[in-house]
Amino acid sequence: RVLSVTALSFALAVSWNTLEPSLLGRKVLELVPNGRNTALGLATFAGLIVACLVQPIVGVLSDRTSSRWGRRTPFVAVGTLGTIASLFLIALATRFWQVLVGLVLIQIASNTAQGPWQALMPDRVPAVQRGAASGLKAALDIAGFMVGRLAAGYLISHHVNVGMRAVLWTVSVPTLVWLVCLLATLPTSHERLVPVTLPRRSLREALSQAFAVDLKTYPAFGRWFVNRALFWGAFIAVNTFLLFYLMDVVGLGEAEGQRFVGQLSAVLGVALVGATIPSGYLADRIGRRPLLIAAGVMAAAGTSLVLVARSLVALTACGVLIGVGIGVFLSANWAWITDIVPAAEAARYLGVANVATAAGSGAGRLLGGAVIDRVNGLFASGTAGYFLVYALAASAFLLSAVAVLPRGGELPSEAKIESLAT
Image (cartoon, rainbow, N blue to C red; front, side):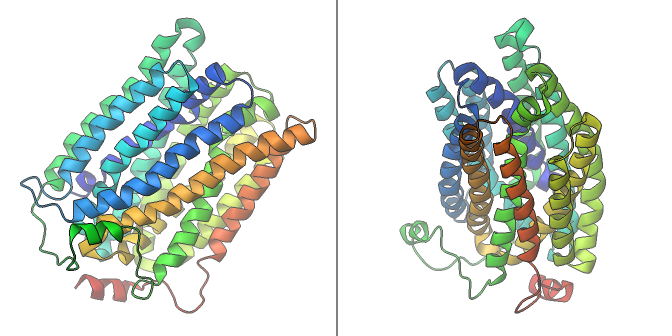
C-alpha cells in the first residue's frame, strides 16, 4: 500500500534526471554552444516559474474534486500523458525556443500529476508512520535519480555515432517508467477518502486564496520553507552545472563527462538508498530536526571538498558524502511537511510548499548559470565562476541547518503527531 502511494516518485525522478544534465546538456550544446551555462539556467528557470503557479491551483481543484475515480486520479493520469508528450517535444526540438516551450509544458504536466499525487501521503498514511513512508519515497527518488542519470548518460553518449536516435532512446526510458508507475498508483489514488471538511467558500474564493498559508495556525511551515529552499537551491546549483564543471574545470570531454555523471549516479544511488530508509525510521523516533541539521552539515562538507578534488575517485567520494546528506534530508524534510499540512487542503498546501523547491531550484539554476559565465568572463578564466557558485552552495547547505535550530519551539514531537492523527 505504501509503495502504491509513493510509486510516482520514481517516475518523477527518472524523468527529471533524464532531462538534467544529459538531455538538456545535449540540446544546449547543440543549439546554444556559446553562453551555455546562462542558457541552461534560463531555460530551467522559466519552467520553474510555471511550476510555482500550477501546483497550488491544481491542488485547490484536486482537494475539491468529487468523482468516481476520487480526488487525485484524474489529475495524475492527465499529467502523466502530458509529461510523456513534452519529453518527446524537447527531444525533437531544432530551435532553442522549442526547448523552452517544451520545458514550460513539462512543468505544467508533471506538476498537474505531482500536486494531487503527493497529497496521497497525508490522505492515506498515519502521522506516526510518515517518516518511514517518507524514507521509502526518498529511496524511490534516489533510485529514479540513479536510473535516470545512468540510462540517460549512457544512451546520450552514443549521439556522436547514431545522432537523433540516441536522443529518442533516452526519452523512451522515462516514458515507460511513467506508464508503469501510473498503473501502480491507481489502486490507491482512486479509493474513497475518509470524509474531510473543507473551508466553506466558493471555488472562486478558493482559487483566489490558492497561495495563502495560515502561519498562525501552522507556524512550522515557515521554518520548513526556509530549510527546503536553501538546501534544495544548493543541491540544484551543484547538480545542474556538474557536466560543465567536469568539462571546464576537471578537463573531461563531453562523452567522458556524460559517462562519468551516469557512473557517479549509480554509486550515489546505492549509498543513498542505504541512507534514506533508515533515516525515515529515525525521523519517526528521534524527530525531524536532528536529521535535517546533520544533512546540511554533510552536504556542506562534501561540496567544500569538491573545490579541491580533481581526480575522479576523489570527486566520487565527495559525491557520496553530499548524496548521503541529500538522502537524509529527503526523508526527514518530507516527513515534516506531511505533519504540518491540514488534511482537508493537503494538495493545496503541498502545492504551496513546492514553491520552496521551485524557488531554490530557480535561484540555483538562473543565478548559478549567470554567475559562472559572468565571473569567468570578468576574470578571463574558465574556472573562477564555478568555484564561486560551489562555495555559495556549501554556505547555503549550512544555512539550511541553521534554519531548523531550536528557537521559539521545537518541531512536532511524536506524541503531538500522534495526537493530531487521533
